[in-house]
Image 1 (tube, rainbow, N blue to C red):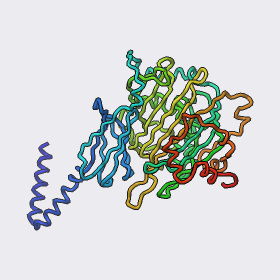
Image 2: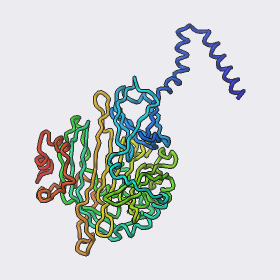
Image 3: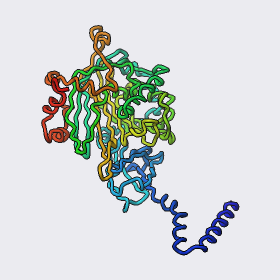
Image 4: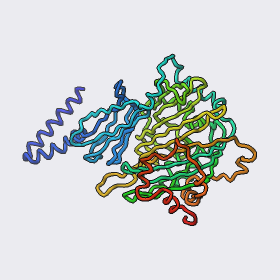
Length: 477
């Protein structure tokens, strides 16, 4: 301590002697160089994200700025620190957290105070399903172990055929600019699939490095679906109405969404080697489709969201925050939501990491077991820049809706069906597979009809049916 004080006093004396040799103007410039780092450090914006009611900090909440195109996650105590010099003077701050309503807040570099508090309210959708009767629940890890143990009883141990609607909708500046849909049939292997081939990731990494940038990040999920097969019965897409002329990728691979089935692919999340890196806690019990459920929230135990992935190995890091919904009767996982922490380095994926990335997967009862009902992925990415330097953001929702499920028989086995794997080559399959007659006889259930706002935006200049026929009609590939 005394040594540090001695050094400090010597340094101050040295500076004073130098300053006395220069004019006042030179002294001001010299002091500016010395103290500028201190003042610039003070320009960091600290944001605290917390529960609006309990004031409990929310670890790994997602924060991004729309115009600046910058995103980051809070730390374990709900705080994020961001260099304001990277932000535009006026912006919109977007804050999201699983189980809470999304917040959009105006940002002004000139007037914002730091630390800045963001209070998130619990989702009203969740509140409507709250069960007020309370009994002390088992410990979270015990519930999860029960879920893994009961997999064979809760899900099909035989291969299934899923017929589904795939839908992809892209939004730009609050307006929907493109719709892409497909009718798919998937040969779905039995539950669970706990292991993958020992050399798979080495082979996979050799292939994926050569993929276009737009497909690399999606490929991160593709290993899980290695044994599943899928065919495209029919496909269609609207025109791209981007007012900035930004092209969107022509449909991602619907098969990749099945990789989010965490109860089936237990090597990805429901694996002790990974689970032990997460912290779990009970949330208020709820009912899902009339069935009482335990609700477990989870997030990384420590600040493990900065790491570098070795592309030749499966990720073993804790990178999710989210919630699991498990039935009280049989410990079946019936709903799974998670968000991706953004403060990380992922080798050649880095520039493709989205500003926001949320997954929701739900299951429904089919005969004596649960099957995949709906899968939804929402991701927001900065795709280009406007002439004024602001980012152009595209928010895309990709969803699968199961329409029909049947057990695999000799007549419809994988050997007798023309299943293909259109992975990483969706443009070819979707341009060649419009099949207007298939769509004409395909009736969408009321629950998955396009929302009026989406339909109105897409049909502002031309009816959807005309767009489908014009883009991918017969003989027009």
